[in-house]
Image (cartoon, rainbow, N blue to C red; front, side):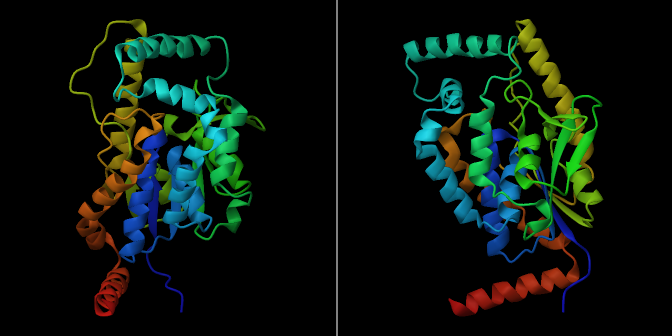
Length: 309
């Protein structure tokens, strides 16, 4: 008999490379037998969430990431070139000077082109992780959040091409060209919903587990140029938007991703472990938020695992 009680929804937030921490969270949820009835993702959350909802295991998604980062396709891409300039680890004075110049080069590019990254490079990455299926074909009900740049409205995809929905959700303004879809001009879902808690509720979830992978607040803020002012203003706006939405979550999991830039690929492996740690620290809160039936199933599963050992 299928359980028809309260539904548990997983809201996966955006954060570029930091979204790899979502894999660690999914690992722990599976290990603990915590069933998820539906998934809603924003940006990186839509990429990992869409791959998982399609039937891929967390281990399979992680293996794909590791293989992609070793592939000629990635190593020859603009995505890697920019990511390398943003990594501060073990840089010589020469490399730091090069980074300074390249950062300004990429920033200048944004004034003359709709995006910094090649659309084909970015689309091929989405296609690599997400199967070419309709959203209705996913194993777990799934939705992806995007933003219409024309009207400013939040757009939630719960039908149609899974790849196109994820691509629209991940189109970071300035970095990736917006996606034309009918009358909509679609960009990153994080513009209107950094962590898609409201959309998860609207999709039918009674209990919402939210996973946030945004950067830790900076202890010291340097504001010297117009670019600094614009960047800081954006951070304040997104922070206020996020805080408002977080009030509607039942459980908040916040992996400690530090100040990692959204395009810094050097710590991909560490991020999975960071996600696992954060999820384990939240197990008490998750358990107390689950419907009674789910708690019984979870504890029964834990008992069976102990008996097998």
